[in-house]
Image (tube, rainbow, N blue to C red):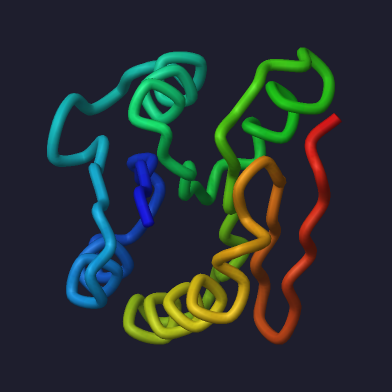
Length: 117
């Protein structure tokens, strides 16, 4: 799968997904401090699912009605980077077919997948 990681995503998550064969572009490796709208636009240009820990993307998708290939919001604060990477890799493996065109929230022990309007 293709992913575009916002700079709020821990590097071990990016590395784990790459190790599992996914294509992952990471803002932190490219151009830091770009706006959320630019991040979303670049993810869409790449036909990539956006990985982020920034809740502002919900605002962009649901209130401003900006389109996205798909967004995976990581709500994993307090966990080690390695634990986060494991959870994200498992969610992607288990729900890969459901992620495109959705807003997915990943938290410890729970995955919520909601279609974009």
